[in-house]
Amino acid sequence: MPAVRKPGFQARETEWGEQQMKKIVVAALVAFVAVGLALAHSLRAPFLAQFHAPFNDPSDLAAVKQIEQDMGDAMVAADIGKLNQIFADDWATVASSGKIVTKDSVLRDFKSGKDKLVSYELGPIDVQVLGNVAVCHGSVSEKRMRDGKDISGEAVWMDLLEKRTGKWVVVRTGGASVK
Amino acid sequence: MKNIIVAALFALVTVALVFAHPRNAPSTAASVAETIKQVEQDWANASVAVDVGKVSQILGDDWRGVGYAGKVHSKESTLSRLQSREFKLDSYEMGPMEVKVLGNIAVVQGSGAATGHSERKGTVVKTAWMDVLEKRGDKWVVVRSQSTKLP
Image 1 (cartoon, each protein chain N blue to C red):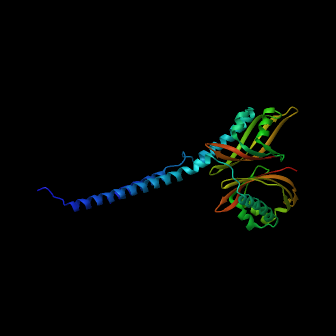
Image 2: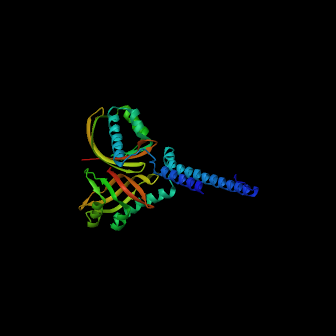
Image 3: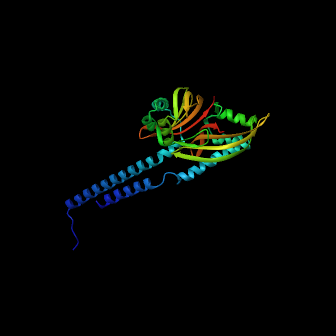
């Protein structure tokens, strides 16, 4: 016997079908939006990198310059705790002898008095901020003692800093005596 | 209900796949370091060959370098000096290099011995240097340099 469906039942079935369709459309839209957002997030970094335009945030410039000043002050005061904060643990430089100098050895030499900065005067500093990294070029005139010998003079230097957990730290340093 | 679950699962799987897919060609720190070292070697070779075009590609337009005498050089002045052959680099023996990569920025410290001559005399200079490179597009270019004379 063929099933006889009453008109009311048919109407309810149609309504149920429309609701199902609406839910599928909404779910599909959610899926498209989610995929779109994910793709946008995925592509954003390399896309923007191609259009790199150096943007020197004034607050970053000021912070980086302040670090350089703080470093000099901490050296004069032999404030090892402060120097420990300014230099990253993986900091390194190449000394004028060609040897690699690490953070540990610098802190040790300032602590022991082997290296002593008596006074210093920074020249103008050129800072270039490249995202989370900053490069500084500068000059300094300093009165410095090493192993009891006066090695005062003028020098040019370059520091590479990185912003780590919101704080700028010095990662690499290069320098040359000019007088 | 089944359709909704299927659509939601599809969305989740697609999102997961998009995030799981590497954004750039796989490049380990080691391979980036090798690329950087090659840039440095290319720079030295191009300077010896007086290949101004090649040096121009290696240096960013905003490049600044501070030489061991304390003088600040721009890309323009460096290319001009290279072209003039005011000082001709005859050879450059590259020493060991240490590269640190910080995302799209790399810093390299190294040393080398340069042999060259000007009109008056020949010179051999050993230097230690530090370069900062930035990846612009798919190419690493040198943006800052500094060198010091070694004894």
